[in-house]
Amino acid sequence: MNLEQTIIQLADTSGVSGDETKAAELALEMLKEFTDDCYIRNGNVIGHLGKKGTKPHIMIDAHIDQIGFIVTYITDDGFLKISNCGGIDRRLLLAQQVTVLGKEPVTGIVCAIPPHLSTDESKVPEMDEICIDIGMTKEQAEKVISYGDKIVFATGCKKLQGDRITGAALDDRCGVAAILRALEIIKDNKLDYELTVMFSTQEELGERGAKIGVFDIDPDIALAVDVSFALTSDDSEIKCGKMGKGCMIGFAPTLDKELSQQFKAIAEKNSMPYQIEVMNGETGTNADRFSVNKSGVKAVTLSIPLKYMHTPVEVISVSDVENTAQLIAAYLQEVTV
Image (cartoon, rainbow, N blue to C red; front, top):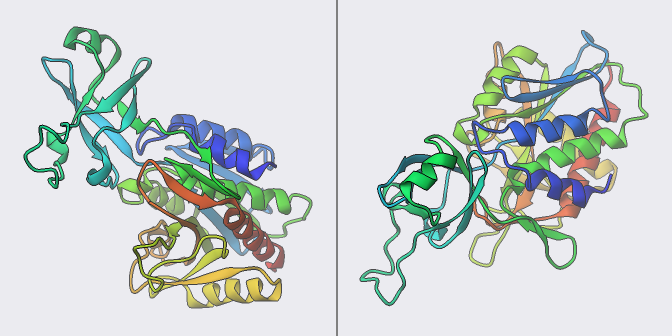
């Protein structure tokens, strides 16, 4: 596997929360390299490996959806009114280039008043004040765009210096790539337990895909592979991980402490770089849904450091994705029945 290219291919495929079909279909094709028993159910990509019905039943998850927008109205002048799907930083929306996923892709620009004409440059517009200019009349727009169509940032992934990548949907396609890479590492290993892989839908709307997926799968142990905050020049080392320093292993009241400690011990035994991420309550990831499934599931978060979360220019280090995959693979190779 060319991990960098896998990340880019996944991240550059559209999959706004609630409309993840293209991204899910691509991930399913990639998953088929490791198991024939895989499918899409209620938006979630599911794959089964190992011995069904054998304990422990382990599930590994990364969410397949990305933040974006939804068309709510077409004005008489042909502008699109929109709302957000997931948490959008409205400070950086103005003058962004976007793609409207209508009957055919349509390029648009988020409207922005030139600073020369603005009376308050510091004002952050509300979502209901934002319009998208697609250069069409209302009649032209209605032929290719419908209410409810999704919109994505039009920023494809680009390589930065070293092993860093920037793009708009690295959250959490890099987590999907990490799981696929882990499966590649262990593909020649015989698994004496049941392993289920899930690439879940609608995480950005409240972990909805995770909730229905884990209820159906009903695992004993669940690993949530996601992203977390990487340190930038204006943030605190206490709150953030560092890029290039490996996977961030989660410790939180809502996570299983023994499982977190087990991943820490595996990393140390194998001389793998890792970081500790301490959270004081819920994690904001699918692990929150896993841990309270039915009578409870042992859950842990494994996070890839990411800069500029929920923007068109998220940044990751490929080495962190590889190290996360190596840690997952080492854990899966240690599991005993």
